[in-house]
Length: 240
Image (cartoon, rainbow, N blue to C red; front, top):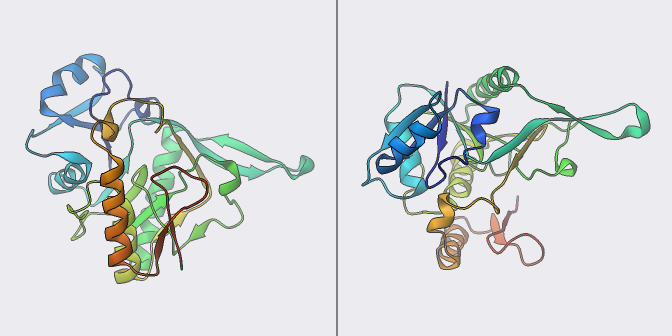
């Protein structure tokens, strides 16, 4: 199983290595030496400079590994675990995952995905304990974000027409073609998306997001819509 951590422009800021030190960090070739200096104990792979954008980077990673099970995580993960219902006052309590526990859990999710005849699984990545359901652990019709997404690396690739929202497109395509995805709602997963410079923020624009959302709505009519209240300017909602 490969744990792939794409990163760009975040030398010294890869928080995910604190959670998963065995993850492989993929960076632009021009930044590889800097990352190697900053993280001497990590495996750093240089991606050719002509591979531009996160979508093409993910596909390059899939094309350049022999691993059948590939997990993509963002480079800004801050905490991972479970929320369980406590006996006292029925309150939720967080149980922090170790790397060994997490890798074992991901392998189970791959086995479930294989058994279902699906291609991808994803963890709940809102970072909000209210969204994590220990008594309703799975959803089959939902979206998996590439903040934490497992792919069975056979014939599946991200659509290069989507420089952003590529994970939403893949989720909808898998639901349409395979019948569903494995959405793990019992895992707690938190990122620092909006406060860490670098990464996709270097090229992500509202115009790019709007075009991707419009393409998704046109390609999957009735399954996706914009969020008009709450969320960020990039938010969409899936309807089933």
